[in-house]
Amino acid sequence: MRTQGWMVRPTCLPNHSPHIAVIHLDNIYCAAHLIPIFGPSPISHNIKPHHCYDAFQAFYVNKYADHHTFEIAA
Image 1 (tube, rainbow, N blue to C red):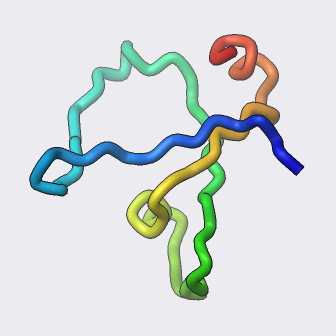
Image 2: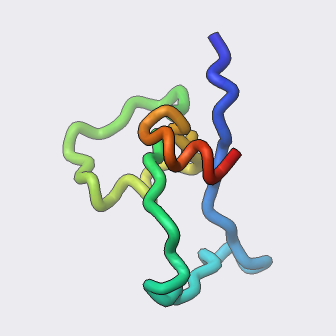
């Protein structure tokens, strides 16, 4: 079943280091609910929520979590 969701992933610089920037709080419009895209490898039971961004290569944006967010992003 396809959910027609958006896939997002972190960007990297040409030397494969993460592309990082500081964003001012006034520029953040709303939060997004990200769902990890699981691969074929097993996931450690010791993973903590704050390690998810580093543990997964890509995410789906859950457009069904908040209908207001979906209206903005669509």
